[in-house]
Length: 64
Length: 296
Image (cartoon, rainbow over all chains, first blue to last red; front, side, top):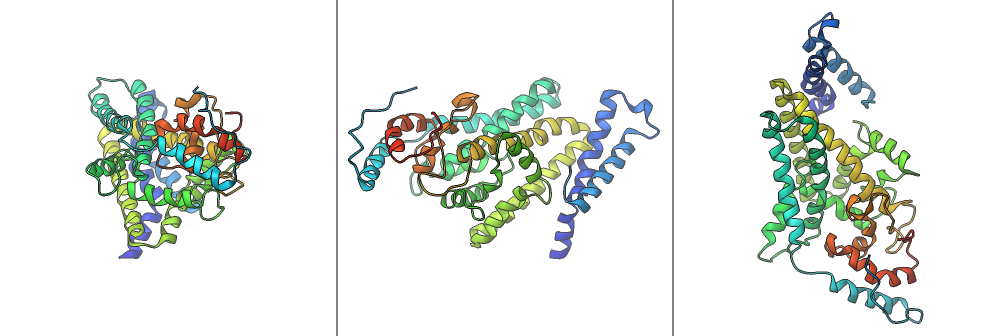
């Protein structure tokens, strides 16, 4: 049980990417009117960014 | 600024006599409930909470709410700091509940449990500027720009700032310290649950500008004025060497009273709002002790 919790916490940047960065990015794309220039929906674009950024943060240990 | 209260010639006094005089002056500024801090804590939290419905219902524009939220999150720490030192009410006194209430609620926006804040802050007082034992030593930096760079780096998942408080609690190893770690984890998970829920229900920008970004800006501001500036260059330890007086570019209110933080480290039970007067009363003694007063 403890190992599952630890793993969950280690992956926190990924959860943050999916849970917050993705919908935030989608809302910003819509707010700035950029959706027309994207080949995917704002939410898909947000998920791509959130998963990629959050996932790389899990590996690198830093957001920037 | 108030002038220093006239003191006897200090040149002939030994260390013990100076200490006695210093304590007598400090006593004059202690005691009573700092109602200003109590009001500040409750009003500040109420304003921050009110921003959520006001922006969700489009009564207040986000561009106006964002700076207010940032100020609220930053202003939440100091009332809790008064509670950490039992300044609002000592244990066993009738208003003790108020001390604990302020301690617990005022740092909610900052996401800092009272238990963690109190235990780690006591360690900071005990080991100020110690390279391993001071939980706030990660704010040490050569200059303001380096502080900013360190501050961002310390908040990364593998950053020192993220580890320093949990390491301090682990070192303490007491049941209270263990419980504080669990409270920090619970608070962090609750925060993320709120952020994620707000974001996935169409309020991501509101959540970002009312909590996420204000929290980061407030952490930077608090780290700078409550830790870096009063302890800079943070190379020495010792009662009269680990904290300094300094002149802030943004004045005393803009630096949240931290120009006089040296008084707090010498006499932690003096309420924040009385530290300027206590400083001016005690200044000749601080000079005699060769404290770094940086022109203040």
